[in-house]
Image (cartoon, rainbow, N blue to C red):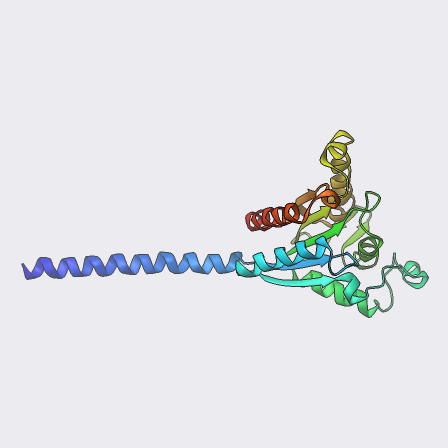
Length: 229
C-alpha cells in the first residue's frame, strides 16, 4: 500500500511539474507577443475627436500590457515643410539629418507597430501628417534604390491607420474613396518602404454624430484595437 501511495505522490508531482513547465512557456511567449506601439497623431485641436481616439487606443494597449509612445505632431511643433536644403540632399542623404527628423526616425526604429490617427481633409491626411511622411520616411532610412529597383528598409514593422471623415459612408462607398485611399497609403507610401498596413479603418460621418453617438464609436474603437493585437 505504501508503495502505491509513493507512486501516486510522484505522479502528482510530475503532473505539477509539467503544468508549471507548460504555463511557464505560455507566459514567456505571451510576454514576447507584447508590442512596442508608436501612435502618430495629427490634429491641431487638443479637444478633437481624433485626440479622444488616440487616448482610447493608448489606454486599451497599455491595459493589455503593450508599451506605447505617442507623437502628437501639433503639440510637438513638428515642422512639416521639406526645406530646400533637405530637398537638395534627398537623393544622397549626404550631410547631417535635421535633429527633429532624427528624433522621429529613432521613434519609428523603436516601434514594432505604428498607428496613425488623423482626420480626412480633401481626401488626404492633414498637411502636418503629409509633411511628417515627406521629411521622416527618407531614402537610406525607409527605402533605397539601386539597379535592381526599390527596396523597402522597414520590413519588420506594421502600420495601422484610423482616419475620421466628415463624409457619410454612402458617399464614400459609392465613389470608392476608401479603396483609393487604402491603395495610396498601403502601396504608394508604406508598401514602398516595405511595411505592411495591417489595418486601415475609416470612422465615417463623424461630424454629423451626436455626443452619445461619438461615445459609442469610441467603445467600438476600443474593441477594434483590442482585436488587432
